[in-house]
Amino acid sequence: MSDAALRERVKELVVECLFLDVEPSSINDADNLMAVHGVDSVNLFEIVVALEEDYGISFEDEDFDVETFSTVASIADLVERKRAEG
Amino acid sequence: MARETETASPAATETSVEIHSGGRLLRGVLHQPAQAPPAAGLVFVHPFAEEKKCSHRVFVEMARAAAARGCAVLRFDFSGCGDSAGAFEDVDLNAWRADLRAAFGYAREHLQPKRMGLLGLRLGAALAAELAEEELELACLVLWEPVGDGERYLELTMRRSTLRKRLTAHEGGSELEEEAEVDEAGEVDFDGYLVSAALQDQIAEVGLLEEAKAYPGPTLVLNLSGRAKVASAHEQLASLYVSGEAQAVRQEPIWSTVGLIDSAPTVQATMDWLTPVLRLPTY
Image (cartoon, rainbow over all chains, first blue to last red; front, side):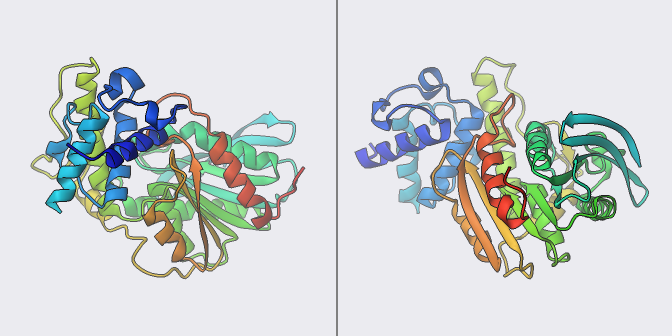
């Protein structure tokens, strides 16, 4: 399980990249981003690039799974794994 | 050759023009303020493939905003793109470099502005930056979300395409298509645009971040995203210019968003920067 600070940072990125007019803390870790917050492929790609920039990680093609990017919790878990891989 | 003129506003006209670039015929639109010669002139350099389509309207709105303030603008289509002659599959980056030189020469000859500048988006910004290294007397260089590293750009474009296909299937679209694959000839399908291996190699060689720039004039690197901070690559690029500055503008990705976009943040930030640089009237 990724730490709370990382999940909060992912929420901030979601709000920034989607131009949402909500507080990041109002997004639940388990919210389905596509269903609840209208994330689409364009938005998601901006989040992907921002995560790579902020955390110095690089996603692989096989990481681009809809389930992996479905919630803040699953995205944060992926970022955590990537950071651990170095 | 001017083909047609219509009134865009009481202060500006828009004229369809044809430009010869070697044996190729380019088509464009000249936005001219009432004042002649104009206080300044800009040549806009559009981005690559699908990004050109997405950003077309923003270019029109930026051109009209500039013309309304006394700055003439030439928008044109590269060979094989938009209204210009040729097939996309038959042209390459060197042809587009030649097209940009031809368009720049056309604008300088026909507008005779007191000051000339370039404005480009994404790969178009990279080509504009390249030309600025030859045209050192340019009055300004505006780089919207420039591609600084061609290899990274290709990688991200492929990944965006893959992601879009996977999510389109998930979002209830058609059956999941095969992901972008390289065929035997090395061609890749970029969202419907067949990009040859040679063109991929040329794009991969684009490298704005490698050395300090000779162009000494004012340079604006505009970071367009939902983020308040400038991306590190854009900061780095701005630092390579003698008079470079990077700004973050909160704006949806105008090069990849399908549908209407409110381009006001980008247009306003650009006009705010251009006004003193090109000494445009502030009325």
